Image (cartoon, rainbow, N blue to C red; front, side, top):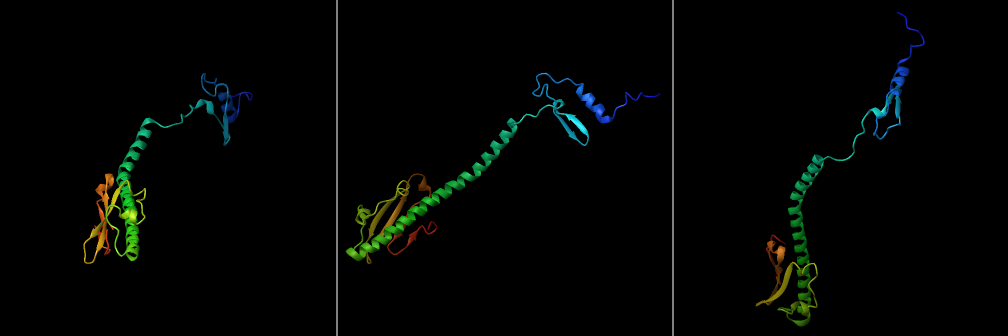
Amino acid sequence: MTIPTQQVRSLPALRQAQFAAVPPRSGHRSAGLRATHTSCNRQVDRSLYPSRHKGFTLIEVMIVVGVIAILAGIAWPSYQKHVMRAHRSAVQQFMLDIVNREEQYMLDARSYATGVNALTTLNMTVPTNVSPHYTISVAAVAGPPVGYTVTATATGTQSADGNLTLDSTGAKTPSGKW
């Protein structure tokens, strides 16, 4: 059997003729447009493949929310401990400032400033980062030798951390918090 030469076509020409015969899908975003891709002497009609939807599935979003919840559950207690230590550090610094002022006052007045008005006598005010978490008091210690004790009483959420004391001899309690 012989094939007339008019009907013999090359393979790429045959594919091109085949794709040209396919009508565009109605309602498809590329209806009427024929996007072809030429690679290695092949032509692929992109309108024949359905477009991929972009976005996340509900399962993927729920997995991400679950991972974030686990990380937050681990990180939140650590963050709370860090905040508590930061408040403790601020009150310790203020207590050391009070001790320095007390020693200066002792050199000038030959006594320590104690009692309710001790901070005003020393010309000091409780800093705003300390006052919501601690109440500061300065009490006299009967001698000999005469001395004082600075006490920071924890309030609110800081009460779980406990109270701090510092006296005129430099003794700091509780020692594990200093």
